[in-house]
Length: 253
Image (cartoon, rainbow, N blue to C red; front, side, top):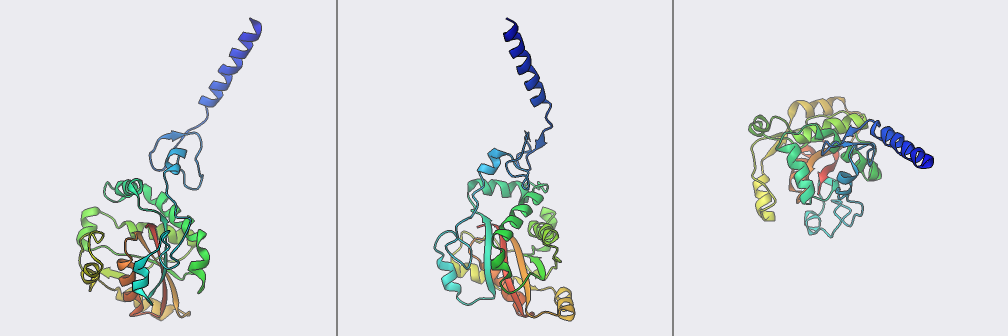
């Protein structure tokens, strides 16, 4: 009887100690957890297990895990290469919708950390011509900005720039909205994006005036890489005014 009581007492003390351990919220689902799966991401084990990281690259141009006919068609281009953090599966679509459309802006830090992790994983690709001088982002139209309240690409670029200790400069302006590109043919996408972007004169002129290095190494940030059309047009627009090496970094592919 005495031994049983001692055992029960030990179990109770262990339970109390466990219950007394401070909990922290998961960065995505907000559920309290005792410890994070990966401390830098601040997500629980359940959420982390659902992240489809792109770890194997088959297309060295766009970073895709499968063969990519689009990059063969682009040929020589202003966009040097692009890398993405995750595959854009159903789970990641839900994550992005929570951030982008349901205005859960606290997720920007999680997404930016995932971008930074991807940058470090492929750092040699981004720095083969030297360290980045500037981080920029794909702009949204004024109407879209007013409707949504923020530009997710600009937020991610700002947080990435902080981590890389690189200035974030708006190099582009968007002249009009475009409908979703994923359901269109390649020729339709190309025609739809003609004239959408133009250089941001003040930022471009500032770089031209103050840059001692040429070409300028630029990382352009966006949320999703679908066919590459958007990043390619952005790179073309930048390179029409600057001698630059432009690299893409997106959250999903």
